[in-house]
Length: 280
Image 1 (cartoon, rainbow, N blue to C red):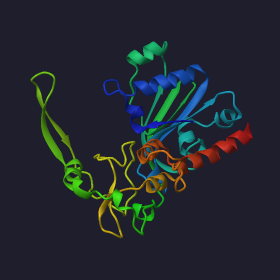
Image 2 (cartoon, rainbow, N blue to C red; image 1 turned 90 degrees about the horizontal axis):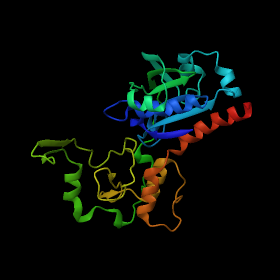
Image 3 (cartoon, rainbow, N blue to C red; image 1 turned 180 degrees about the horizontal axis):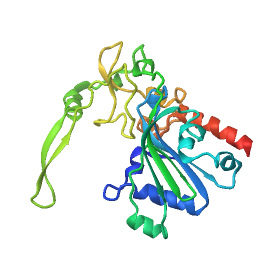
Image 4 (cartoon, rainbow, N blue to C red; image 1 turned 60 degrees about the vertical axis):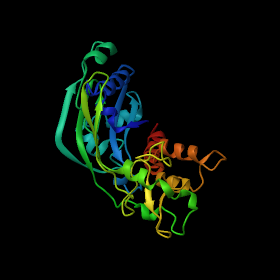
């Protein structure tokens, strides 16, 4: 099992799909099949809009492989594969299948490019990839996560409100490159404060700092604008309260949660893995 950001499938910008192609070639050379899916945790009932690429690789001499080797590649994504059992989908007709022919890894690195979709499989030198949409379940909004009885005032924004307004707002800034060339740096606005009837945005390791990506909510009790508490960030990822309260500074607790996976997603995959292990 591997996990990475969703843009893994599109990197690098100048040779789309090369990096993922190198990974698939390595697995193929070692006798593995590979299934992948980009999953947004909020689509399956969790409290964070966190999109991540999940990769399941298995040797072609395992019992698991032998149970599904007769299924065609599309069927593995639709109904027979690793992800579909816990993360049901609707499958589109926008699919691509190629023979993954290459001389060596250097050849892949220098020449390979492909538009990988958000779901796919590589088996015995063939790649099949298609765009899928989740069969969604109701998500958990921030209102179900945050403390309703008030928190310490140290989490309030205080006198930095103007800075937060600037960071969260839309921008169009004229900049100069290393040469006299000028360009416009643009970014859109972020909800300020974050909407409590929606799941959290993707948490980053900078959570809790004076940063554009940091969540800011209006406290339901004090009505003040504030950042999330460490406990609330733990809940967004599905950890028990105070899981990171080991004596480390709060900024590191935020950092840990920005780096974490959504526990519930991994639990679901673990249940499927257990069934496969029992098969072996």
